Every structure is written in structure tokens, then in C-alpha cells.
Image 1 (cartoon, rainbow, N blue to C red):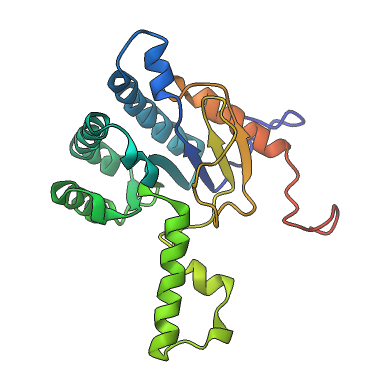
Image 2: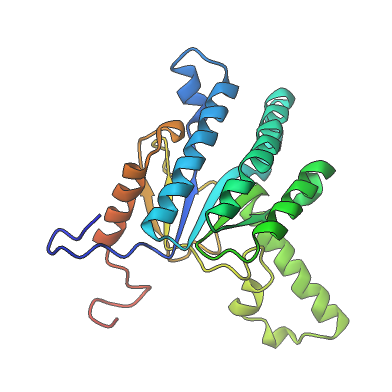
Length: 245
């Protein structure tokens, strides 16, 4: 992946976030149950994590299960949780061996105890790895996250440990699930849908959004590279005018 004007490789975004969409449509187009699409989606996660490491991306966040997904049919939710268990048991050793640190963000209270235990064990095992941080947004909703952060600030004000005048953007950011994670530079959504679906609303303030038609189970390293190439064609001004940055 190189700049078209010279031979130097393009510097990857520090943080890429992906809304993985299209598992169900992938399965339906092949006459398969939705579960088959979700299983193929796990393969795409593996490919994307490997590609991110090869491209030098520092943080990769994947939107694996939203707070709204709990409203899906019980059987589908159960299948997704089983896939999650499988991933946490079968992939963590490889992630650890390849220098990947795992972080899970979201509401763990709704997850079963065995899944929470698997998450904690995986996070503890990989906590010192530095090649790539894989952030899994699980049982996650951004509005819920912001609401919880605001509630924490309100509780501190009520306790007398925080003056309302001292509430700043930074203080709120420090109370989000992503407090120690840089904001995403690039958010990619697969399957052709053009919305961000309650994902990293606060953190995405200045992210570049790239929407691709590829269904998630078919997502490849080349798709990721193409999204990064599109990212580099954008002029990121962060609210400033051209020439001031």
C-alpha cells in the first residue's frame, strides 16, 4: 500500500474501527441459516486482525454485538454467544503469540458469568502485548456509554469531589469505556449501509467514515487497504480551514 505519487508506503491510521455488517445477507444469498454467516464472519475477524498487524495499525476496534442486538431472536443471540465462547477459547493463544492485546468494552452485566470469566482471562493474558490492541465492542451502545459517564460525573458532583464548573470534555472522556484508547481515525462499515448505528458516537467526532459494499464475511486485507487509501485521500482539518494545520 503506497502513495501514488512516490514509492513510500502510506502510514496507516493509528486506530481503525469496523462496523461488521452483512453476515445475515451473506447467508441468505446462499440459502444458508444466519448462523452460517456469523461463523464466516469469525473468519473475517481473523483475517482483519492479521491484516491490521501486518499494516502496522496500532488499534483495531470491531463492533461485534450491540446493546440493541439483545432484541434479536433468542436462538440467534444464543448462537452468537456460543461463537463468542468459541473465539475466546480458540483464538486467544494465537493472539497472544502474535503480540495482540485484547480489550473488551461494553456492558458486561448482561453477559453470562462464564463469558465474563473468559474475557477477564484473555485480557489478563494479553495485557502486556504491544503489537496491536484489538478492542471488541460487546454488548455495547454509545448512548448508554455516554449516559453512564454523565451519571458518574453527577455522582462525583453530589459527593462533593467535583465542581460542576470543572466538567470538561476530557473529564467526560476519562469516564467512557475507551478512556485509555485513542479516538478512531477511520471508521469502516461493510455491506453498503451508511450509518454508524450507535457506535463510538463521542469518539467518532473527527473520524473519517468509509462505507464499503463488501459483506463482512467476504472482507479481506485488500478491502482494508482500500479503505485506508480512501482515508489518505481525505483532507483532515479538525474544524480548521485549509492551510492552518
